[in-house]
Amino acid sequence: MLRMSKSQNLEIRTETEGEKVIEGYFAVFNSPTELWPGVNEQIANSAFKSIGDVRALINHDDTLVLGRTKSNTLEIIIDDKGLYGKIKVNENDRAAMDLYSRVQRGDIDQCSFGFIINDEEYLTNSDGSTLITLKDVDLREISVCTFPAYPQTSVQARKQDLEQYESKKLNIIKENLLRRLKNGTKETNVNQ
Image (cartoon, rainbow, N blue to C red; front, side, top):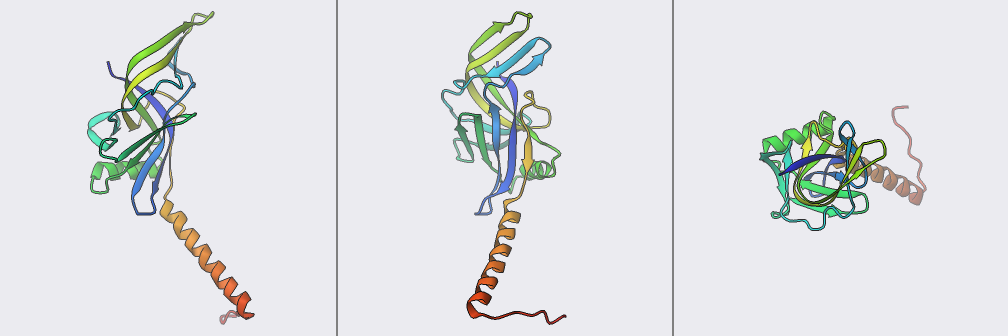
């Protein structure tokens, strides 16, 4: 059975080569979330023991593929915080570009992942509540979502090309100041 869970902290940016990217944490370790009253689920650090051919989707819809590890359009990284994904957006795909714009505006700000459970642990607390810990899962897909399951996740948008523009502008100002200092010249404003 394929189960869906939710994650957060996605960013949208443009790489230096002009490539648009959606990236961030699709799963956060050891962060319980309520599945329903009295039942919480968390992901253990060991949950993603091996990563196979994973797809990046829109809202878990397998007809809306954003990227894939096999084609190197999706990169998956496991670190101490969780499962990090980096999706290279296909600018010729209207759905992908629409999603990019929606995340950039903040209309969509969360993500999720789909998996099959290989090993899980149930712990019943003294108050009768249950904590399920996913110890080993077969990751099938990650998704940028409107309504994911885990509230610890969010997407935030920024455009790196704007930052690059601001950086270039600052470098031009610095170069002009250095040239003036080197030449010992004082510039005056002709409009004064």
